[in-house]
Length: 113
Image (cartoon, rainbow, N blue to C red; front, side, top):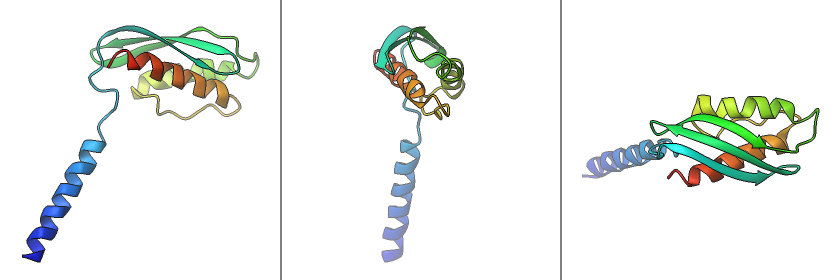
């Protein structure tokens, strides 16, 4: 009897773990959404969702520190689209800008849920 209960508990735990592995961006409503966040200065993005996935991220307004922010402004939007998630690594040396882009995209995606 104890063996059956143990097996049932293991199955329930595995099922719970698998449900938790699903993408939080799944099931987004198609459209174009805007979001903003605070980096070194206010930063705005435009996020396009197609077929329920992030299809495009564009930084539309920013006044980040020249010379430091460019790598994040170029790399983070592409990484978000590629991964279909904002769970991407920040660009070294441009952490504040990287995090602001990810936060702005998350704010935009709240409208798509």
